[in-house]
Image 1 (spheres, rainbow, N blue to C red):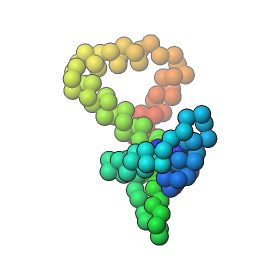
Image 2 (image 1 turned 60 degrees about the horizontal axis):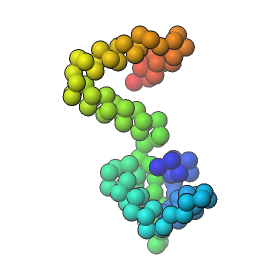
Image 3 (image 1 turned 90 degrees about the vertical axis):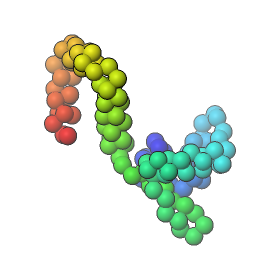
Image 4 (image 1 turned 60 degrees about the vertical axis):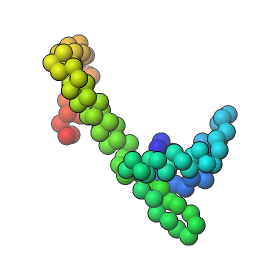
Length: 110
């Protein structure tokens, strides 16, 4: 996902090339399988151009992180209820002023 986000859109070969710039070499089929699964989960769209598939992210990295965090918090509150909320409140109460201001700005965006 990071590579598709950074490029805006990418083919399997482009992602493979970017990932294989490091020490670990990945197989084309591995990257293709992962991108196909990400499309099936609704995180990527695929457009066929000739014999090539172009993948695009459905949401920005920030939108994804926000949705993921929301889901995780909902799961915690669902499982632990008020105990989870009390833990969140305790952590927020310990934040410094700068971090609290940043948190307020984030909350205001939604």
